[in-house]
Amino acid sequence: KQMFGQVSRLLAKPLSTAEAETLFGFYDWLGLPADVIILLVSYCVSIGKKNMRYIEKVALNWADNDINTYEKAERNLKQKQENNKKINHVKKIMGIYDRQLQDSELTYIKKWLYEYKMPFDVIQLACEKCTLNTGKISIPYITGILENWKEKGIQTLQQAKEDDMAYQKKKSTQETVLPKNKGTKFTNFQQDKLDFSELERRALAGRNDGKG
Image (tube, rainbow, N blue to C red; front, side, top):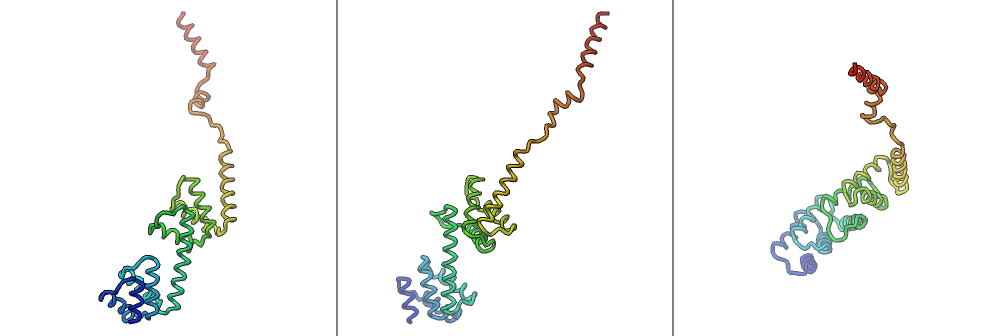
């Protein structure tokens, strides 16, 4: 009863019979203690999810991941908060303020943070390079830059800047080296095939033959 009353207050409405049975299922079938269920519902309400279907989805996830004590639930929520904070920071770096991330965008950002283990300043440099080269933010392009740095063992802003400077220097050197002048097909034809002295001799001979 105490659990039902607290959940009802969190949801700011009386519980229906179906909702009460679902909550009891968390306790009876999933094996979640009452204090964990109350914390779970409180978390869902805090992110604007009061629908019992969503709450049930979270409860199933916690049960599957053995989050069945108050301490484990608290650690899980703290980790979620830290992850969301990191993701929101990357959103700001990318200039995304007025919308939620798409699932594909979120997948890439998690890859940058947790698989590539790139710090924020390195991600920001990759975003700046992307904007400079393409004129816009392109997640696949940024991923390509970060993946290249990861393969080179680059994990700091200083390393990334040094790598970029080395690339720009190499590129500049290649652009300033002029290609050998091989001539055009036309000039090569003139030089290889035409002998102007011979042409002049033939022309004069032709005139003399005509006079005869």
